[in-house]
Image 1 (spheres, rainbow, N blue to C red):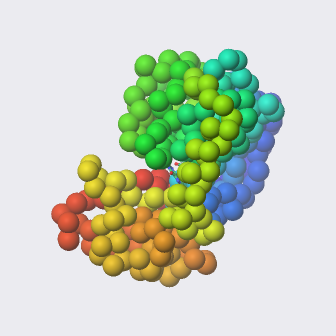
Image 2 (cartoon, rainbow, N blue to C red; image 1 turned 90 degrees about the vertical axis):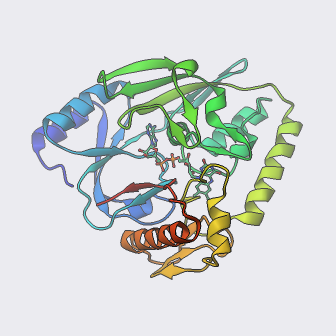
Length: 302
Ligand SMILES: Cc1cc2nc3c(=O)[nH]c(=O)nc-3n(C[C@H](O)[C@H](O)[C@H](O)COP(=O)(O)OP(=O)(O)OC[C@H]3O[C@@H](n4cnc5c(N)ncnc54)[C@H](O)[C@@H]3O)c2cc1C
């Protein structure tokens, strides 16, 4: 979708939003799949209410992009524009055990920065790509921990009130790859309360988690992490593996040989290929195990 109305273009500049014409989502997502649309880069959180009012008044559909590491985006010209926060400098400020973090901050760099300042707890998430905002939205987790456990406060644009608001940790429910935020809420910043730990001890935890990932995940290939959520008490990867589906392909979309719940783009896979592979695997698991696998990857169809 292209924004060409000069009145909108002028207004965007007035509210500190950069308009980038024709961004290709294949270049902005870890799967390397996705078509083209206009990208709006938001330099000031305070612009969001004006920006959303402007887009809605002009019937411009929109989606919110973090680091693009949990997304499968449709092919071709996309029927909505993309919004993304510009990362400020600094993006993490520490105050005792409280880390004040911008949603655009890189998750891994934030964890390392906190670790160097003797704040731990997040070791399990090292190696998870993307932004802190995306991790909050997805309640990213690994190796028995999840980011939601450390959230004390979130500043967000709330779709319901069309205002920027603050929510305390206890007002938000964080479940397995699910949060109580409304689909159109946009996380702007967060305060995490992290336990004090000596850097050396945190580093040891980080090394263990890095090693687990290296030995079990196709880290050098284009993926979006796990495609399916684990059903209660079961492992989606194990079921797919037991059915002998590692290596199953549709075009260049392929079930990883390393980790059966990671589907990789082994070349020039299209969204159509990847969606067909997901549907095929889901159907086979349903037939053999009677379990309907739910997507963990967020699909933005064209
Ligand atoms: C190799 C690899 C390993 C992975 N391992 C794990 C893992 O161990 N555990 C895990 O949980 N995930 C894992 N993931 C998935 C992914 O990295 C996480 O879900 C990550 O937190 C997504 O963040 P993002 O910024 O990239 O979000 P995006 O992919 O950009 O967006 C995902 C969703 O969040 C929304 N969103 C993004 N930013 C915001 C915001 N500021 N406000 C509101 N909504 C927002 C988007 O609209 C979209 O709906 C892995 C991915 C890869 C490629």
